Image 1 (tube, helix red, strand yellow):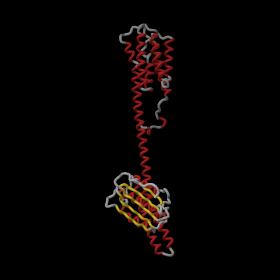
Image 2 (cartoon, rainbow, N blue to C red; image 1 turned 180 degrees about the horizontal axis):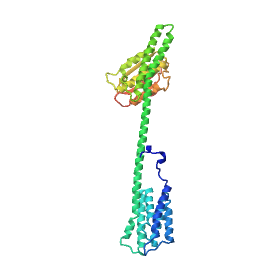
Image 3 (cartoon, one colour; image 1 turned 45 degrees about the vertical axis):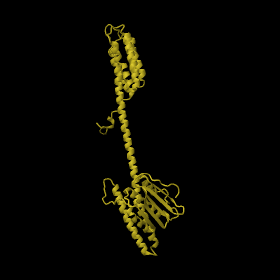
Image 4 (cartoon, helix red, strand yellow; image 1 turned 90 degrees about the vertical axis):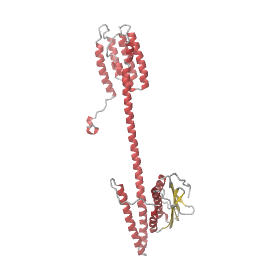
Length: 399
């Protein structure tokens, strides 16, 4: 029966150790007391010493879980006292057997082995001494040396099984924790990826719309034709932004696959990106040279996004008039460089999400991105992306 089908009041809980010790002591006391009350003819009958040893044995079992070694010594001494006193019974060794079992269950293998050796020797010695007064069959001392090993072996088996189950439970718990950590890591990674994609897709278009709307507002009275052209561009950019946003949200919705989503942009689409920036009033020059090499799609996508975000920052922060974009293969790396002639503050967003996104893309591919003011004025963003693999050297220091 599963826990989900069981009411809270019916869930079975393990007994406390103290209550278990009381129950075991009661059962052992009952069986041992019945055996101690009657002894065979020719043997000593129960007297005050018999019942004293009985009381001590049963009382010791009440704390067997807390002090198993001490309880084993006490019950073992009582059992030896019965034998040496001449009181013979089939169940008089039951208290010490229970104590030996508890010692093995609560201990470790080394302690069990030491206890087995001592218990066997003591039991054999007591059998020899007691046999001087009572007729014993030949070989009885050897048998007496073996019986203490039975509860120890049983306790060792039970303890080993418990340890094995605990190891399995711990391993399952660690595996579950690892799965949860991995799931959280993937969720965080996906959240960052989605945020980066939304930023890259929407920020550039919306920034261009803002600039074009401002241009239309300034030219509304003096140059209405320019204003109309700018507003048409705003409308076109707005439709593009809405289309891109719907496509992105459609992909993110669970169980929905949007077949109309465009493929990831590549370097061949840099001309369109540059035209959008030019529509915002910038003079943009583009130099793209891949040396005729077929670049991986991820490399081209990362390069495209770096250029897109750099142009967005120029439009929003730089107050620049001219921007130079260069994308070229040098050795085994694709170098992407965007420079402007602004006052050196096109990174006005500081360590904003755009620059963070650029660096994350490049780092994920084994490359890097650096950005900073130029000594002669202006701002430069430079990224290096490995074409084949491996970490390319990225120059440090001021640019």
